[in-house]
Amino acid sequence: MGGAVAVLDVGKTNVKLVLFAPDGAAIWERSTPNRPLPAPPYLHANVEAIWTFFLEALAEAANAHEIEAIVPTAHGAAAALVDDRGLALPLLDYEADGVEEIEPEYAKIRPPFSQTYSPPLAGGLNVGRQLAWQRATYPKEFARARHLLFYPQYWSWRMTGVAASEATSLACHTDLWLPAKNAPSELVRALGLEGRVPPVAPAWTSLGPLRPEIATATGLTRDVRVLSGVHDSNASIVPYLANWKAPFTVVSTGTWVILLGVGLPIEGLDPEADMLANLDITGRPTACGRFMGGREYAEIARRDLAAPSREAVQALIDRGTLALPAFSAQGGPFAKFRGRITGELGESERGALATLYVALMTDHMLTRLGVREGPVVVDGNFGANVAFGAALAQLRPKQEVVSTRRPIGSAYGAAMLASWPHCPPLPETFAHRSWDLGGFEAYRVRWLEEALASR
Image 1 (cartoon, rainbow, N blue to C red):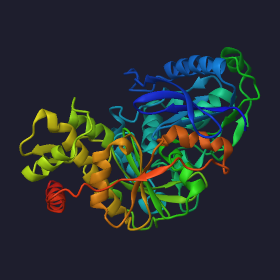
Image 2: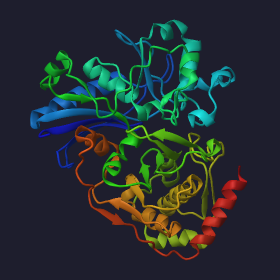
Image 3: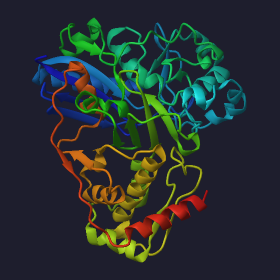
Image 4: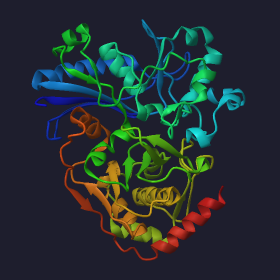
């Protein structure tokens, strides 16, 4: 591989096009906010705005760099029903109102957690519930759909015309897949989707050449490889899968904090705690836990986004000021409960409290998942938050808490698919060091007791 790899990274908050050199270095990037469109007919992804951004950015990038491959990666809980002309229905945003109205009927056809390892989540976070609601509400449009495409594969389909499915998105709390068997669940039949779920193409599969009109619009040659693509949180563990042996746990941080326990058993997962099993790109079940940590951090911190000092964190512990979950109704073991702050808090201390909150939630989820050995890798936004790393290192004294000096994230992991399994070595890692905060263990115990009592 000699040219750059272009990654279309469709996150819940932002959309990016990032170019990576063969050695994994990011060499070019453009981004734009990802703003869904309101009803009618329901809150839905603005796929045409994303597509316009992508083509314009790709043309700009191609003018500056030779591009060898394109890899789409996107957030979960998003799927497109398409016919030969395009979308049969707008691509539903998982925060759309009204989806839960189908729950009494959906519960009758939903496979049990013991088969799907997909917990019942709020709103449209289970793709199966989205589809059941769309089928009941828009039966004609639903019946017209030829393919069900998960979000990364929707973009690869738009680029190539080839419909494909892929393991990491199929098994991402959809209710449609059986991770232990890597096979469809009975829900596919119950929703009338037999024959409309395309064949599985591993994330690193080249689906075909670019459509001629896209090559013309971007200035690329048609022989640019377009890969099947990957779910974003699962993309973040690709470089570790290529370079490390299990067990290890990746804490992927962004709008969501996703904990992926590579090598952990999945049999003890608790759906009530927002624990589930995903599949990695090779089809191996991966124990996962999640909460909307990035959004909760922003809710607590407000405008105080500077890196907190040790003194600020220690002062909150000394005063016993707590942020108790949850500050988002989407995901996590406390999602049904309204977050609250107890104790004295200055506006300049909000960032420190938000950092403590996310560290305590992460530690709690690691414990619930059964993580006891192997390194814990903090990837994404929180990897650069020294206070977060120090707090987590103190909370997990028997494990090494590390981050890479060059952030990995979903875009980097997706880019590595272009050379899978011959990925470059991981960027240099560093260990987070505990600040040895006084009274932190007692603070953690009190936080957990009060958080559990609120349930």
